[in-house]
Length: 162
Image (tube, rainbow, N blue to C red):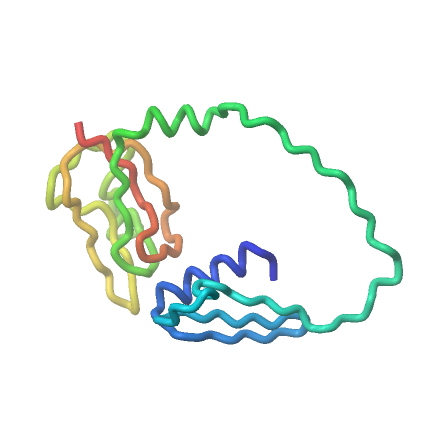
């Protein structure tokens, strides 16, 4: 289990509303506590590695160089896309761009939509939920592949409201 998995687990537990979750695996033990405890350790997630046999060869630590902050194309894109609105998933499920395999997609990049237009379908527990637009504008980017699982509040589309 790497740090990304642990971070995702912490986010999931925080969203679920659980007070405490304990996870024990072969070489790791994790306890995540949330809730109304207002002590100094609030928000602390403890990770305790279990004892493991020492490696046969000594570990070597290499120096790490940190590069100076240089503006990248991503930061330039972000400033260009500041005016765009992100349409997010209202539920957990499977994202579909079309109502059936032989039907056309609800929207494409460049499609002009208005309030109430169907953008996609999300299947949750064998129910197909049509996701309608709450805004008018033009679809700039589709952020999720067809038939992909999506999480609650995951970005699905970028919309230019102009």
